[in-house]
Image (tube, one colour):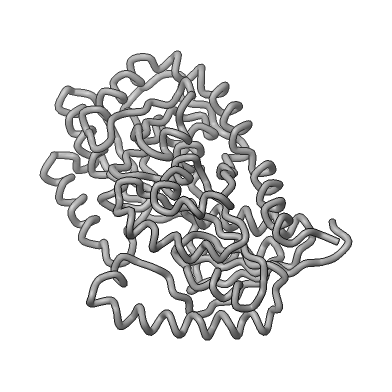
Length: 383
């Protein structure tokens, strides 16, 4: 613990327990380990709140401008205008009350916080979790520009850094790549010695078109048509407004004869019991991903993973004996990988332990927390 106690204000745009939420939680743990007082500003309550409180952090729910695609359309401009002014006012008042020594801005979707930090003369660090190289460079630049006001920028992958460089090179001059710290299960269960019964496939994450769970259903239907027994578990829920996509998945199941072979598990804070029941974890994202926490989680849990060979997913899952990188947006490629894994199951299962050891070395939460603390220390040295 340092000689003085600092107050770090952490601003985060959500309260669930998906990838960026878990990294925000790890960052809070990093600051708390250093003896810092931590106040976390969230726009809503959710399962993340209890985890944050368990670290000893304070949590404040207040209005914030959180950039969503819906706000970029003409129909969302009124709400964008309203949220901007409400967020600025609420953030200004919170800073006056908390009197932070530093502000940690978790994700680029909350652009007001770097501006508030600069106006109040408070050192700030922005953590970039988002990157779409296939998106408009102009839009990307607009999203990144507010974070030029932060004194330092943390980026979760080299892919994200290169995406920033293509859109706003000036931001990369103050950026540092810190790979996500990923926590696996305390006692991972060994994979099955042999595949008896169905090959059990697991998808974890948002149910959305860009994440591609429908591709798993198409691949599973093809395998079942060959006489292979397959079961699919979908662990996750849709984002509000995307209920139509879950309905579409259910329709696809009915039309492809997968009734009884697919299970909707919904969102579960503790994913490990479901990972333990699975044989293979699949991350079939169609579009760019800045990183691939889920793929690393699967490796740490002693499960082979099948991952789209693109963007930050390649960076997260590359180089492991038990990771299959396949062409994005291809159900055929997914099916081929599943066939290969099933046919070589004995060898695959035997290699999972070595992959888990390597993943823990690459993505140790302790190393992550140390580097995040250092990022704050560069802006606000301890005395």
